[in-house]
Image 1 (cartoon, rainbow, N blue to C red):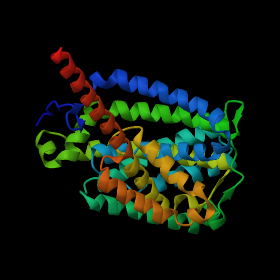
Image 2 (image 1 turned 30 degrees about the vertical axis):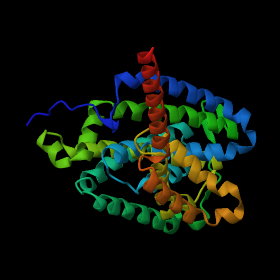
Image 3 (image 1 turned 60 degrees about the vertical axis):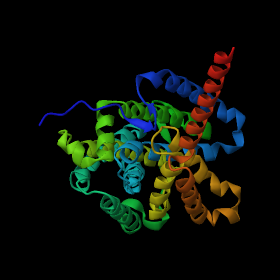
Image 4 (image 1 turned 90 degrees about the vertical axis):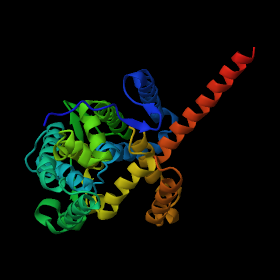
Length: 343
């Protein structure tokens, strides 16, 4: 059976995406990059937080096609972060690979590994896929502690070199932040274009009704595997950059709690936009900044935030803001039209 041409996806009721929104998306992207460039000068005391948010943005942005379109929740991001982090330490410290080459090779390896796992896992539906990827997260947390010859056990890998781009060492918080801005912008551009491509429309059809999509000739497992591979690549890059930034990588970075936190970031910010994961990462990573006592309650507070957002803003915080602005604009437009008709 041949594939039918799919309609454009709809992110929210009455608002189609695609070419008509491209100028607005381009303007939003330019404004966002300009703000990101200015942030180190506006909030110089919060650079460590901003770098951490940027790293977790990479870990979460790759999930937007899988969760927001295909409707599959993956808890396996920590496995690919572990491959990126521990792999970067091993390749650069033991085999003396260039740091940038190590990060890219590990990202490619993670993508291929995701395709292998996806061949089996992505035939599962609903929460069965989430449970399968939860198994990956549990195995990763266990191996990161037990595989001492590779990970140095609970103490973690120490002395990982900083990222080098040619002869330039990316050492300072500001330099790491700008590298993350570039990579985050590239990842956002790729996922945004994917969402509005034929592949994105196929993923949306699979997420809405996999049976109907199959009747149209769409191979759901193939498209979902592609989305899973994208999430693996960005998570691996996040793990490598985390290791290069701290020059350290330990089991604390890839616990099951972190696996859940990554999904919470996507859900809180919104899984159907490139800005949602950024907001989610900023909210969840910013919670411990309130104070040490508060940080001890971070998992509980994060859970409560998730419950509140899912109850009152099912499209995430960014979805709520976007829909609110759209609603206000429609009211202003109707008011202007009414005034013009009354003259």
